[in-house]
Image (tube, rainbow, N blue to C red; front, side, top):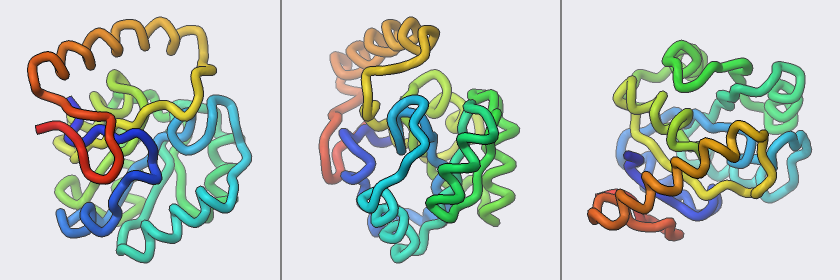
Length: 173
């Protein structure tokens, strides 16, 4: 279960995250920062990265996608990356924390998938933020997993375990 559920990365309150002791933010690529298979960034995204840094939070992309595209986006944003992550395995999350120089208590993970981003982060005890995907376009396998994900999220909401997605601070209880 995510600790926070938001509609957009732009709804993330970086200062509130920093007040929680977070210094490193591991961020998914596809359908979190850019649409699936996208590799172009825009000024809004670059501004969001600047706001994170201004709040004292360093980001790192961790993606199951191929190296070339992940690294191209990371270069545009001037942040480190860990491609071919094999999430929800823990190794890539550990590598990102190492690159950022943070420990688990200082790390949050932001992603659009419950069974890769959130599950992988929870296996290490990290603070987790689920975001609504920026696009409906996805790999065929992800579309299948989304069916189960929707059912699990609906179950969490019915039980009062999850609120949102909302902007500006909603989330799991």
